[in-house]
Image 1 (spheres, rainbow, N blue to C red):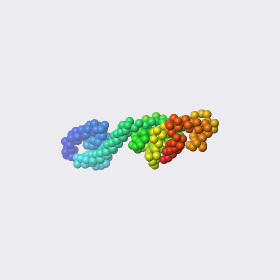
Image 2: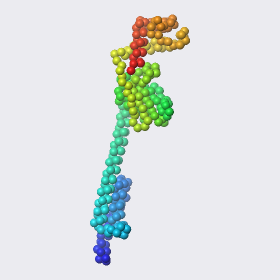
Image 3: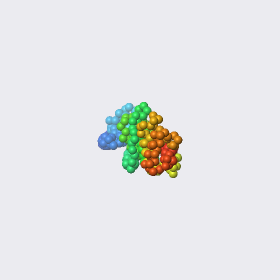
Length: 276
């Protein structure tokens, strides 16, 4: 026994030195990699003679240099795998964060090119908020998405749900028709979209001059004083009373068009507005 103790004393010195180096390295690594830091600390602790002795006493297994080396190798293998897994998770999270930031920046940059008008915003359903947005005609789905992302990111209503209705025709909005471009909904996470399929024949769309006449027609007939006692918008002479006939003459004289042409424009515009 005395011979065995004497035989292992030189190794005890190196065990202390290597163990202390590993412990110091482990402490230094903790801030960068928890898994590797703990691995170094455990390896250094196992190598130190007092710990080796305690393990031998508790388990009955003599901690020879060979067993210490095997233990350290196993620890480093486990620690390396854990550290690699943690790094991969960290890299993935970083990549997702970068992608999200790039998408947000791209959305803001794209939105700056979309000349939209916020028509209304206010409470909508319990704990919800609604926005109504007017887009330029023929806006793309990308335009809709970029505007929706900006509105959601800048919303300060504190609502659990956000609904955004998109139009490209303000007249349809004013008449209370359903959104004619898209609906966007957000309740945390990704924004979902419902797109309106545009089946309108562009060749039937009123010209800007026709829309101007239609607006004037609407304005004139909204004036107070109609003997009917309510606002009426006739589309034929037979439907009109004397007060309304005077308005019809006023409009046709203003734009130098016939009565038939006026009613044609009115019917055409109404059909266009309410068609989907």
